[in-house]
Length: 136
Length: 200
Image (cartoon, rainbow over all chains, first blue to last red; front, side, top):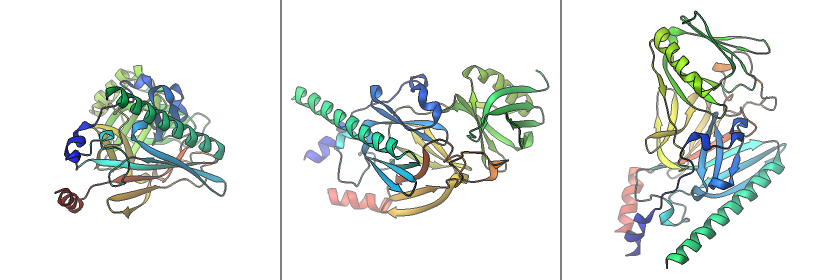
C-alpha cells in the first residue's frame, strides 16, 4: 500500500536558525522574498514571519478600486494537491495556516511578488525533482 | 536605578511615528517624538511582559491585567538587561524572553489565550494576533476558518490617532502591506474519523 509508506517520508526544511539571518529589510514591515533561503517573510502584527517556499501553494493578485490584494495560499490538507512528503500529514491534529491576504496601493509590486513567488516555487520543485532523479 | 529610565525611537502598537518610552516605579509612558497625546500605563495594570524579536528591532509586549496587549518595538538587543531589571524591581514582573519559531512551517497549533491567538510551531510561537485586531471570523468551509482584520480606513496615511490602543485595525494595517485576512485549516474530530474510515 503506497499510502501508508509514503506518509512518513516528510523531509524537514528550515528557513532560518537564528533571527539575525532575517534580511535587514524586515524593518519596513513589508512582504520580502529571500531567494537565498527559499523563504517568504510576511509581516504579521509587527513580527517578521518566515514561510519556506515548500509550504506555499501559489500566490495571486487581484484589484479592487485603488487597492491591490495579494493572496498567498499555503499547502494544507484537503486540497488534493501537494505531495505527501512535503508536510507531516500523519499528524492529524495539526492546524495549518491556509492563506494570508495583504493589500496595498502598489499593484505593480504585488504583480512582481506573485511572479517571483511562482518562479521560486518552480525552482524549488525542479531542484527537488533533480534530487529525486539522482536518488533513483 | 534612576527614578526614570528612558528609551528613544520606540513605536507604540506599531505606530508609524516613533517616540520616547519612559519607565518609572508607578508605570510607563510613551510620547510621540513630534508631540501629541501621550499614552500611559499604570504599573498595577501590567500583568505580564515578554521580550522578542520584532520587525523593527526588539519588542516588549505587555499583557494588561484588564486584557489587551500593548506592543512597544524598536528596542536594541542590548536593552534587554536594563528592561529586565526595570520590570523586576519596579513591577515585580519577569520580562520573559520569547523566542519565535524561524522554521518557516505553516503547520502547528493555534491556541487561544486571554488576549491573543498564538500560532505555535513546535511549541514556539510563530506569530500572535491580538483579539482587538480581529473584525470578523467565519467558517469559510469544512475545517476552514477565515479571520478578517480591521483595517484602518485612514491607513493610507498610516497615522496613529491619539491614544489608539483602544482602537481597532491599527496593527494589521501598520506597514505598507496590510494584513486583511488569514485562513486556518483546523481538523475536526468528525472529519478525522471520516478520513480514517475512508482509508480503511
